[in-house]
Image (cartoon, rainbow, N blue to C red; front, side, top):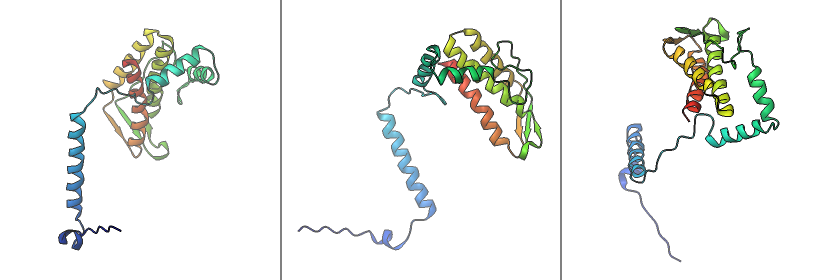
Length: 183
């Protein structure tokens, strides 16, 4: 029977690592991994924010083949009336964005300045991006660009107790829409 024992260096055995030492070790490890990865780097292929190209292709093929539940979900998306925005049809090419310079939303939507406009418009951009992918109609790409540009040149501040939450929800749909149009 072969026995192998290892002993720790005296300094390591006696003193636990300080947070600073641990941070340095982790940082060095991460840097090493980054340089090792860059040495054998491959072309970066972005998978998309929420949907990969394979996801979009599957969705499109099932919608065009009128397969449930994809076709029903697509129709429900097109029929959506907007978050607290009666009379606005986000899937229509005549949809007009209503950007605001400040979104201020607190707990329990008190206050709720601009949040519903942001949610409706960002969702409309996403809906038009999906319509572009499914139908190939370039007018939907132009609508996405119009909505994103309107908000990009108008919105200055997202504030309030729920600023991060609402900024994330609204921003996600804008990012999804831009990523789909870009593809």
